[in-house]
Image (cartoon, rainbow, N blue to C red; front, side, top):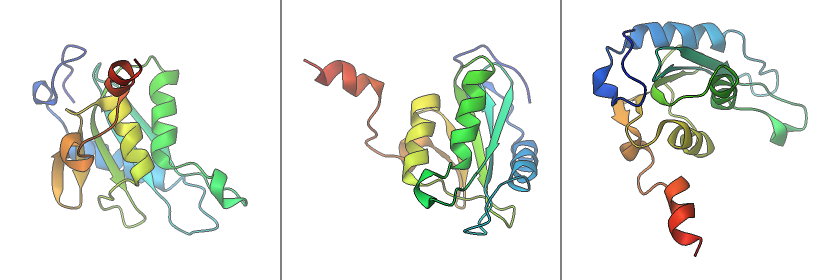
Length: 144
């Protein structure tokens, strides 16, 4: 994957979607999903060229399980921060999987409207994946 200036639009990157898919599959194979038997992996390209990834981690008290995107966002911040440029999430079959609503919000927060997501329908910007999204700017303008 080609590096671009931090903060550049996704068009400034040569996104290797297949490399992101392979990394997501690798993490999916490490998922801890004994209750649902639904492993998920995700990989994201960061605006500085890094690739961050995560897998789902379930828990016997179901509600405290962690989605794969949570792990990826944690790695993003633990390794220097930045913005997500492109994200590929896969299920147990290794094919593109649409993130849940909670995770779409995480992707918006950490990638913004320009972040690209591989979906079962192809690559879409976050503006199509989470239309009329609520984000940090809403807190600034509505806090009055």
